[in-house]
Length: 85
Length: 162
Image 1 (cartoon, one colour):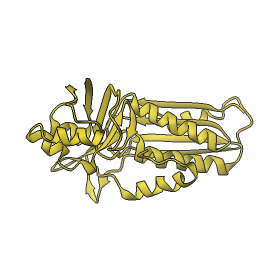
Image 2 (tube, rainbow over the protein chains, first blue to last red):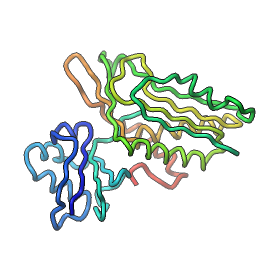
Image 3 (cartoon, each protein chain N blue to C red):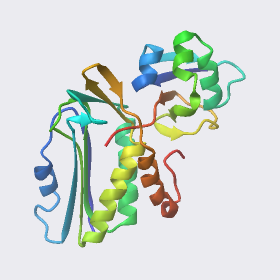
Image 4 (cartoon, rainbow over the protein chains, first blue to last red):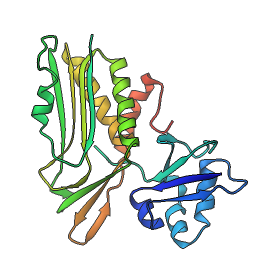
């Protein structure tokens, strides 16, 4: 299953790109598990996802929690806590 | 009761007074108009800044704000709601965003404006980066903002992260 990942703010800076398409590996079922897998992909990913507790996620443009199943998501975004307003 | 609402995400500056005025134009049922304008300060954590840059998640930012506006309209007898939020580089003194709420009476207008601001701060996908003398720094989220948003969830039955 191919999904689009999008990164914002310092997550984007640390990963070094704004988005990418990935194949979700078997055994990765939730957003939290996806972050753990991403952290293992290399130095820049480890830097971005080393502390998943501070990262928020959205599936298809709605906020989700780490335990949310990836399901049929087409786009998953990762970003720091929001600071708009 | 017709409620007019407008949500706009834009790079360009806006005029808060003009936008708020549109909520009362041509109607006589509005008795209260509350406008909140977020303005770029010249200092962050007591250090002067040259500018701030707002990054946002296009598509999700509009959708999230529209969700809070819909909820505000359900919770209070509102006649009009306007939310405008800028992105891109903004210098001190410029407006960043505005919320305007119109109602027959002040209580609903005040409460809805505060509710919208609290949710916008914690849930709308925007991120501020400040330009200081020694470089660019991402602004940290404040736990006080989370607490402010949570007080509405008690009655709303929903939470920012849900």
